[in-house]
Length: 286
Image 1 (cartoon, rainbow, N blue to C red):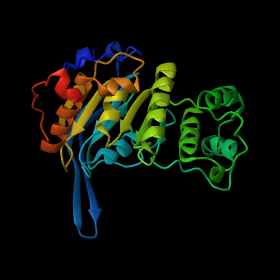
Image 2 (image 1 turned 30 degrees about the horizontal axis):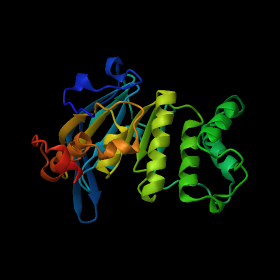
Image 3 (image 1 turned 90 degrees about the vertical axis):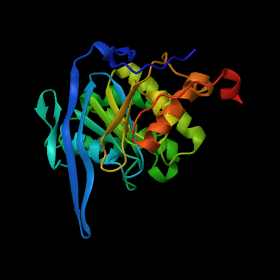
Image 4 (image 1 turned 45 degrees about the horizontal axis):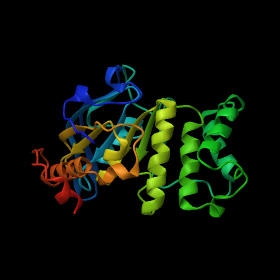
């Protein structure tokens, strides 16, 4: 049986994130974008703490600032006020310990798979040789061993996204930011990718912050689901998720999982949390 709880200390992570120190903190983040038609208020006074080894999913209505928050965490976009702190130091530019995976795989079409994976090493001026055993193991784990010489056009969408995950993990960043990485995939491939990223996370102990529009995906993956209000994005509620690991697709049909989906969807729609009465097993499954 699945049980959901709302106290931060109750979030159960196989990587020990409950007892881990705070790795990254968002302190009073506010962001205004300047546009030709005026300023856009994307985030307002948002604070959040993420522990080492934790898997955090960020949800909210379209345009609420989810991606803005993630890009601020990456150091690629600055904040109007407030700050993001990693290992006690403000994030003011891209950091080597932060990796990012986007919705599009962004593989360079004139490079084969192996050459695409090597690209971050060229940018960072790192010698890839010490990392090659790790990369070969990652390719094996994601089912891409033997495809090293294939061009992106010869790979399916799911294979391209697997390649982008390997590219991000290749240089061993401690924090991985994922901006709706599976949004363009079909439902079956998306389930496969969620199982894959869960396995990689459990194996590596990385800290992952994952933006998605998919409520079920967030519950399936996360230790904590962070829900933002409509723009400007403020913190509406944090849902600690207490599901056993490894999680299975079958869990998503259980009554307690469906109850969590309903509560989170209501929080997204209203911008505030209000507990919902649980329905019976027969009603939830029917």
